[in-house]
Amino acid sequence: MDKETQDKLKKAAGIEAAQLIRDGMVAGLGTGSTVKFLVDELGRRTREEGLKFTGVTTSRRTQEQAEGYGIKIIDIDDADHIDITIDGADEVDKDFNGIKGGGAALLWEKIVAVNSNKIVWIVDRSKVVDTIGAFPLPVEVIPFGAGHVIAQFKKRGYKPVLRLDAQGEPVRTDEKNYIVDLHLGRIENPKELAGDLITTVGVVEHGLFLNMVDTVIVGDPAGPRVMQNPDKA
Ligand SMILES: O=C(CO)[C@H](O)[C@H](O)COP(=O)(O)O
Image (cartoon, rainbow, N blue to C red; front, side, top):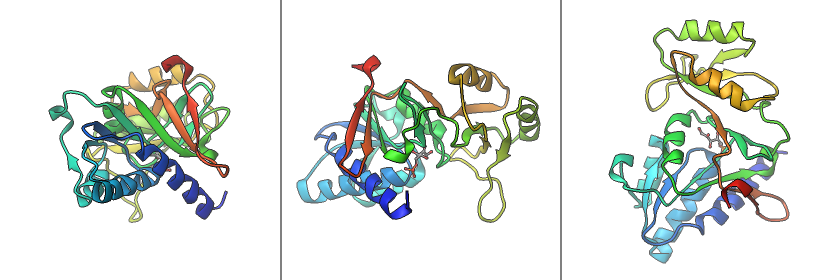
């Protein structure tokens, strides 16, 4: 799929999802190019329709964008609940297992997600896959001793690559950690892998979001379609 088509589908999914936000809600706002379209639409609704809701953001980037539209953003610890979180994803399979963290925001995204009453993902149709893992799995790692964590991953056959920015420096997350991308190809047993990663000392969090999402809105050329997680119905 070319980038122009993909962006169109991302935008359509973002606009569709923006309809889920209503006056008075506390809404988690994810990170990434698809969420950017969502926030643009929420900004439009705020200005043109007088929509009034409170946001909890999963990255400084999203916070800046939302505040630029006059959307009220609060700290997650000042939110006594989050009604709904809308976020993007890098891959999702039919069992509603997904990979996130392409935008290096997976830690805050997971913290916001687990504290939300409902989780909605917005993706273009290229992200719906049979088996996750073609997209390199992001893992957030503490900089101290990161070389040893990477060496362990190598031994386990995870094909780790430290994510670098355009200047060749390690990408830093909003928590100043590193991102190590695991080039796995296919993840046959995501639960086992998640357990292995989270028990590795030095790992803060990983981008496997397993059966957490309630609803996926998929941007499709025929129009956005909804995949409802039967486990969350
Ligand atoms: O997990 C994420 C950021 O950490 C994003 O939601 C994910 O990478 C999808 O991004 P995009 O909408 O740009 O394709």
